[in-house]
Figure 1 (cartoon, helix red, strand yellow):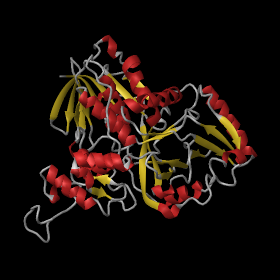
Figure 2 (figure 1 turned 30 degrees about the horizontal axis):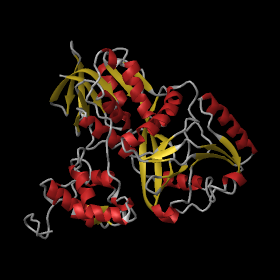
Figure 3 (figure 1 turned 120 degrees about the vertical axis):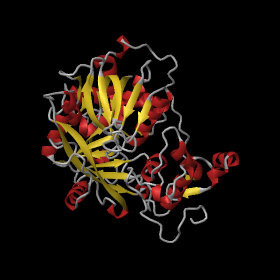
Figure 4 (figure 1 turned 135 degrees about the vertical axis):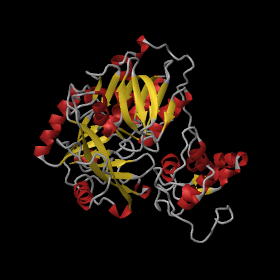
Length: 487
């Protein structure tokens, strides 16, 4: 029997798992997808917001600023990538400048005093491509950008190292209240007992609530957003995160520099009936294109290397929901974690464990807890001498698999066989960035699937792109039997 089952291995579930491993608990994380960070955490703007925008007094406001500060603390501890870019919120005329002044008051009400108002002549010194129609900006220097998948991987790897169990492709199909806690059914047949359940299942949190509550007090709506990715050759086209003035639909279409050099353009924002819909649309991408020009002149759309869409779990209560169920004791909801959820995640976890669940009242501190997770620097970022030293120790560093991102054979091997390794094309891309560059896998994807097949003892017909049924190939056409020579 487990002490805790965490349902969902996105950014919030991963932080919760790591923080639970600080205590002497028996914890299991269940993720219905084929990987950690495969839904909301996979597709967002990657911004660690300053805390300027949430409505004062809300949980979003409280945990945004605290989360921003915790990322600085965890940066070295977990080898987290952080781009300390700062941000500009822009205004184009007198009416918008008045709105900007109102936003300053919200910023102060949220306890954030590190800001500055700049006119266009001052702002353009650091952002030479700023749209010429802009008249004034609100500068928010504590805004940062991270790599969300990497943060979730870091937390889950560290949690596993400290004793947490993780199971992917584990869809929770039923939850029953028992005398000692809960009986959780996985994939229709596997029964798992636990004392407590933490519902961190993103867009599915209300569906899980319906399993244990007759009248859940929240509904989750899917909010769909679309993006373009501009190639890293556009690096330094912008230096800050560029925001328009926020509206009731969210923060709007943004320009966001990424930690690996690309620029994200987007998202739009629209409610959709299907909470799992992540397809692009001509209308959505057209909206993103049209609105990006209000932030910068001559946005280099000729450098687009891909587009994607994400879904956000918007609660009917319009705020984060972090509480014990009113009907089912020992069942905890962590729901409605939309923007600024990525920013707030470490603070949400801390609040849930220390204040809502009071874990310290029941479980002792894990004195063997190791807070560090070390990840080597990318081979391509090292000096020539450092690279040569690695090659001398391990010749697999000399074989470049992904030319666009300069990813070596050793780095792909680690992505496949590491403590949270993956046996899918998408999983290796998320960990090692093979296929994330200009050619989007045109050069390296074949090599990656061969390495997966060899290292995992699979045939090419068994290698999947992402989920269990996303096989890359249907049948062999030119060979009759899988052999290394046949490739």
